[in-house]
Figure (tube, rainbow, N blue to C red):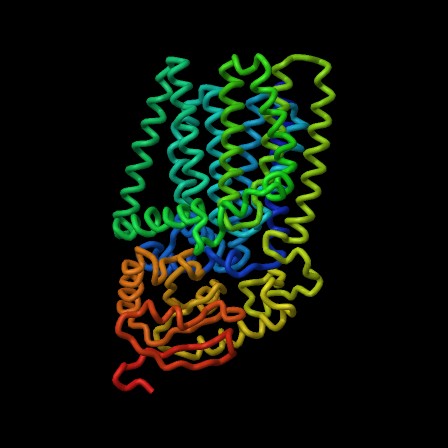
Length: 529
């Protein structure tokens, strides 16, 4: 029987892995939103060419994602396929962690399988491509699962691995990972205080020490300036969060604007459908007196609330729907602990509701691609991105920027031809952050993203603007840049804003396509035309 059960687990896990890959492959190839879709494409390639994030170009999040992508390019080649392999791998990793969490809490195999299929459908495929928010969210969920497994099974390896997951999630993106790390440290402290079992604390401390050692070795080997790391990854992002929480006028999204009935209850109703019953069961039943159930419920409930808060405070489409099967499975585990046979029928009702929600959000996010703001576009108009280059084969190009995808393809091809023919050292400012890899040329990236008003980098009215300005100028001088190219849609790359970042430099301007494509030669200010 044990052998048969092991085979069933292996078979089900294999199906889950295959499905988690295929569903993300399907979604990731279906349309683009350039600013989000290509955020880690050229930056991953730049690492292979010796240009590193923080040191050589400005980032404020996603450090781990860049290096992961460089690894996938190195292993699988310089192509769009490697890009989707990356996001699909994270979807698989998160789903496997969820599977073992369910297995350790003795959830029925068939139910666990369906919950995992739901999770894989709703986790990374909402984006489909590598994305800092989703990396941090996925690794935060993995951290929670491993933490609960560590407590349930008193697993030494799980305790030892937790600090590594802290680092990976935080250096994917600061939030929600920071919230989840804080929660787990509190819950871990509670567990050790209650159990008086400090043996596992030694494994956690050992993992923490090794994590810090590896981190500082990385900083040393990569020659990453500590000052840059502090400004880019800590100080500047704090100002973004403060602006959103305080609902400042320059904030890309204001938390106060998110606090309305439609947003809180309408958009998240399926999450509340499972969150509220779990909350009620925990606080109005005797289960809260069982340490094992108490830690499970508090970890799931509080982390869900923190994910919910973080989602409201971020300027993105909803990406936390995979909490639905997580909350539902926690609810089922609670019903099992209550040991009341009459409650068994609710287990099937919960599963049916999860499947309904999964189908609903699959079509909205994975098929219609709401996350990319192309929900209402006719996907039959999409064109194969191999028209740009074979490296982008499999990607079906349609974006919210152009009514006719072919017009956008033609603009990109025009830019590629012009940039390729220019043999000078150049900077390309664009949200089409894949042109460096296509040309296999270092285009001296300044930023990962270019949103003005202090949302992706400091602008003129920001307290860290001088630091950013010096950072940009040093890189331009070091790389002997002679010309700056701007490529975007509908004047999203205004040179009148960008030129303010350059110290004692004058430019000769050339407009190739009005409001979309231009280049600007750096000239001697005395001889400026």
